Length: 582
Image (cartoon, rainbow, N blue to C red; front, side):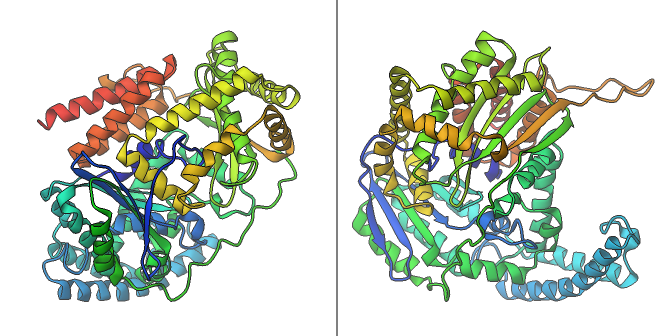
């Protein structure tokens, strides 16, 4: 199952920086161990959208174990002492032997790292530089991994849910949280409580070492094999001066390859304790029954011995503009990223409203750069208020015959206008009305509401779903001008410019490059993304695939003309896949 692709689409429905214009009645039950259960009964549809969130993401990691929060997203689907194995005793014995051999291999790997630092070797992964004892340890390790597979009941966690009518089981990891969810029939609510509490109470990190390789391959597909992935990752590292947001959610390669199961168990004990979790149910159920089931199953979990440590490091104030230039197989584009504020800061509502003034087909960026001046094919921007820090980024892709420098100047002109002139009352009220209507529509979906409640609770608390709308409606033209002047300064930003990298000429006599007919007419970057989706569709269940199609279809309705071909290509790929599964 490709949980990442689906989660990215789902996350678009539920940002903690936005707020619905309606009071949501949430019933709350908190267990003695600290786990909180949010409940929103909705009669009629005989289903329940159920999920839980761990208040941990990559921001809670440290150098050496970056990527461990995302690795847990994978490990939590590997089963428990009763699910996913044909012989738990044999399973545990194999895991212990793997840990012991890995400990010996680590000593060899540390030696290779030292040799790399002094220039004796150029690649620690090259088999030729390994010692004979290292090679022998690797052989034993690989043999044990094969033996482990023979004892595993593959995807049993998934199969139990599907066999009982559940659908859309998914998960996702971000900088600040890790979330798990599924849609279950109303008469299977007890099954959900048992399944989820069992994987929290009795986790067995089987396939731990082989799953690290899966994550490494995921990184290669999502970051290293895309035209701009590695540049964007380095831009993040450039932008943040001291904040732990500087490393990627998927982790640095050397960390992912080196994380031990012992380190994973220690991390799990702190951040997956019930006092760091919130669960949520939205659908057709009785709150009284849900409370009893929560006590019976989640009540078995023991509170953590120590509360999760707070993130201590605060981003240092930037004193000078940072710049990065990349040459990639993509269209010329520019990004301006400004340090702004975390979720819940008093300036965030004004930045969110400012974002709406700039975006959309009637927003200032699109009207000026795309429609009027025709110097860009797309333009937009937005406030990214994370739990501890935030930024406001604007970007545009240059139209043919126009340069990133020209586009950057146009973006800066519009931002400068916001510093100098008040936004008109009609324009300001229009974007407020649009946001209120959009957020109201999102509440119709049980899934969207569940996501919003969980994400908000992992930030400032679920009650912000009811209190944030008034903050957005209270934003004035003076507020917009003030925050624009405060944050949109040269010394407060980093600039990323992409120039199109020329492809090397094909060798004489070489066969012409074959282009998938489904992807004809797309840019190289769009083809890369579409190919990634095509390759991952076979691993998705049908419900997830259909939900993904629904999200893309909705996006197509409001997409600018130049972005429609890409979305249509994705729909064609998905439709072809679904037809083949009939």
